[in-house]
Length: 439
Image (tube, rainbow, N blue to C red; front, side, top):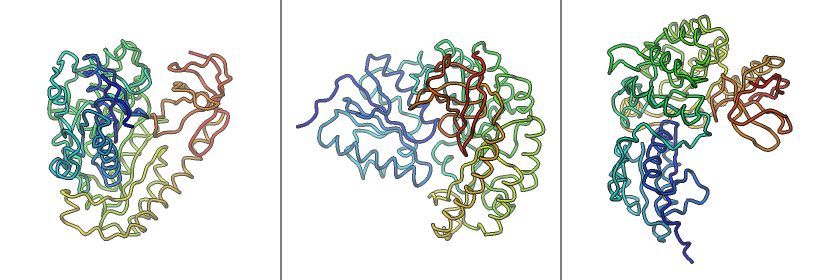
């Protein structure tokens, strides 16, 4: 028997990064204003309208997006929903292929025209709500997208193919969005972009990230600002002064380095040298004592040698990144590497290199966590899970970084509030603590 649809309900399924999540939240706010019941990533997505926001970055992400579309397409064939829409990076990149291969989807939209879903349903887009979102995160933190696109043209990356040239939002727009979110109880903001370093170049003809962060930090109610996805070349060094001077700007930076050997940096078109990379990390740590750095490394790119991996491991021992992810190269059509090189490093070699790097990083992470035992840190309490409150320090972003676990029997700890926590124990990836006082 076919399950009856829940009328007036829109289910939004978001795949991929936090930048996609912001897009979903903006669209959800429009549906909220129209009187729909809107759910995000529901375990039972059985509303009359289902919208899938896809990722098309690398092979694994594309596979997940396609499998999700196929899952809902089967339900659409069985009339278990009235409309199935697909938006986001995958459909921006492969629109014609998807239309031909999965016709059960009522309509495909790209990365930037998803508001047409509203008009195609006979509804009106509310321009007065363009800075508003229905948050899918806990109410005390939000992601804040400050730009779209990328001009860097790294050899392996399909992002510029999908998102186009770098486009900064105005400082005033971003300020107004933050003020709206603070009024709703948001205390912590994660600034995101494909390339934070270039913020302002297109709109203001100058690197404006430091000014933007200063102005946001001046807004009453902004208690933590955290920076994600800086680019190492043409790095806006004045942001380090801002971090050092502003208490509510977290001593945390997510800066994707990808590699370190001159051989690979040249092949990968990273616009920086090995020597400059070492100097960058040293300067960041010198100017912001205690800063925690998150980075990603890409191994298995065509042209990579065993010597390149050894240089990378030596660099990791020098840099001692607090947070690090490693990915195997994915051969993406349309990129420079796809056209110019053979993807001739076997998958098992790629995976072995990933494992080598992550084994080294696990040792480093464990040592860094152990050094926190006995320290008292300011912790934002995110949620309850099992027998513990789960929180984060200023050095930790949601979902990707270590968490602080506090017994659920502890008095005075409250979700969405800060606590001063003494760290009593540590594992490779998590900390344990008890409150010393409550803010």
